[in-house]
Length: 457
Image (cartoon, rainbow, N blue to C red):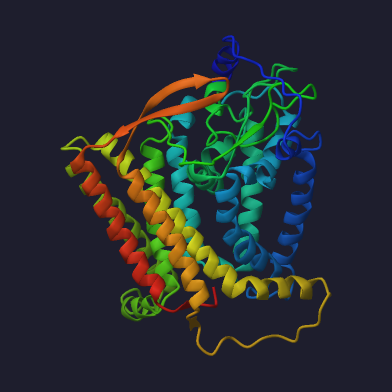
C-alpha cells in the first residue's frame, strides 16, 4: 500500500501553492502542529489516569470520569459536526502512534489479512466500546476509565511500532471509526495531500493521495505539511448540502457501523428513561440479578434487531440483491443517528456539565465542596432541553428523508485535490422503504425523548 501511495502521488498531480492561508489553514499547517497539542494531551491523559487510580477516589465525582464521560464525550459529536475528524489531529492515541513511528522507521506494512478485515475489526471495537459504556457504567467507573485510557495508548503505540502507519487509528480505534462516518456532515472539511512534497514521505495512515482527498479518510496528522507551503492540509467549508460519498467510500462496513450506532443510540436512549427501570425489573430475576449481564443481553438484542430489520428491508428494496440496498439504507439512516447522538449529548451536558466543572475545581482545590445529595427524582423534564433535542432529532430526520431519495454511485471527477461524487435518484420503491425506516426509527426516538430523562448520567 505504501508503494501504491507513492506511485499514485507521481501521476502529474497538480501542486497548488497558496500565497496566503486562511486562519484555520494556518493553524493546521503551523510548525508546532500537532506536536504541541499532542504534548498537552499526553500530560492531560496522564493526569486523568492518576486520578482514575488515586487512593480514596470515588467512581462518582472522580475527575477522570467527569472530564472524559460527562464533558469530552458529549462535546465530541458537536466537534465532529463542526470540524469532522479534527479530533484525530490532536488525539493523544494518534500522538502515541506517531511517537512509535519515530523509534522504528523500517517497519513493514500491515499484513493483507489485517487490511482486509480491518474495517470489520473497527466495527467490533465500536460495539465493545458502546457495550462497555452501557454495561460498566463508565460515567461512574473510574478504574475502567483508567484501563481504557492506558489500553488505547498501549495499543496505538504497539501497533504503530509493529507496522507502518497509524494502524490502530485506521483499523481499531472506535472514536476514529465514529468520526470518520460522521465527517460527511461536518461544516469544516479538512483534507491532506497524501505526500510530503519536501521529503517524499507518503501518508503514515497508509492512504493514497487520491483517497485522502476524501475528508473522511484524512486524520490530520500533519505529516504532509511543508514549510514551503506546497501540499499539506487544506480546508473547505460546507455551505450547501452534505457531501455524498461514492459507493467505494461508503460500503458494507460503513453501513453496518451506521446501523450499529443506531442500535447503541437506541439502547442509550432507553437507559436514560424509566423504561430501563421497568426492563431491569423484568429481566434481573431471569439473569440471577446480574445487572451487567442483563444490560449486555439487552443491548446486543436491540442492535441485532435493528440490523435484522434493515437487512430484511434491504432484501425487499433490492429485489433480492442485498449489497447496494444495504449500503444505501445505512447511509440514509446515518444523519438520524447523528441527530440522536447530539440530542443525548445535550442531555448529558445539560444535566451533568456544571457538576463536572465543580468536580474539576474541587480536585484542584480551587473551591471547597462538602458534597452533594442525589436528585430527589432522577428523571427530569426541561422544556428548553426538550426543544433542543426535538430540533436536533428533526434535523436528522429531514436530512435522512432527503438522502432516502439519493442513490450513491462511483466517483465521477477528480479535480485538483477535490472529489465530487456522482449521485442519482433512487427508484420509487427503494425511496418508499428507506423513508418508512427513517420515520419508524425517528418515531421511536421521539417517544423516548418526550419522556422525562435521567439527570444522573
